[in-house]
Image (cartoon, rainbow, N blue to C red; front, side, top):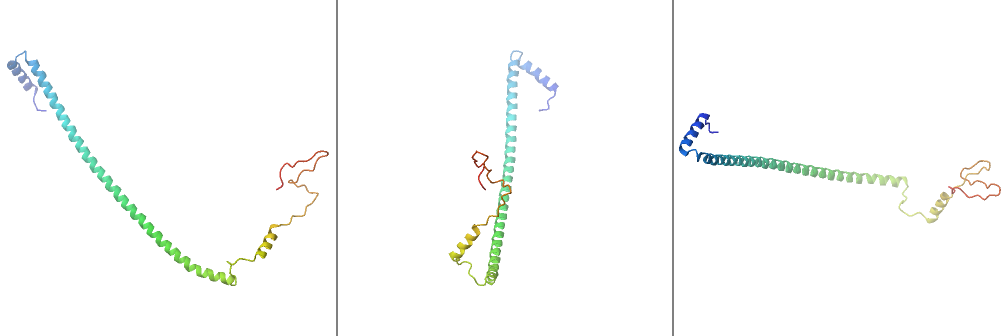
Length: 169
């Protein structure tokens, strides 16, 4: 630390022994050791504080970098979302225009096909009811008595009453 060799330390020790005497030399050595230890702790504390401040400034820089990156990412995403919204609005307007352009030929074709009939007008009730009655009463196919039908009830055995095992379909 101070570039003091062993010979110089020995010379200082001999001079201290002669000047202080053998009675006070151990007390002075202990006091000197305590002062050196206190100085070493102070130097270590200062080093730790400097190191901590350096780390904090590095962390502050890192935090600022991360915040800048996050804000630029947010701005980029907002710009992308705005672009998508504008594109969707443009596509929607184009679809509405195409729909209105296609509506007129379809209506013209409907009038041509149906001969000018108004499809929105209500049909007479009598015609509707007869059509419904005709469609709701289907004819049953002819039944062959010799053919076994799995869904029919079993004929009662001699002297027993039958109970259907399952309902008719």
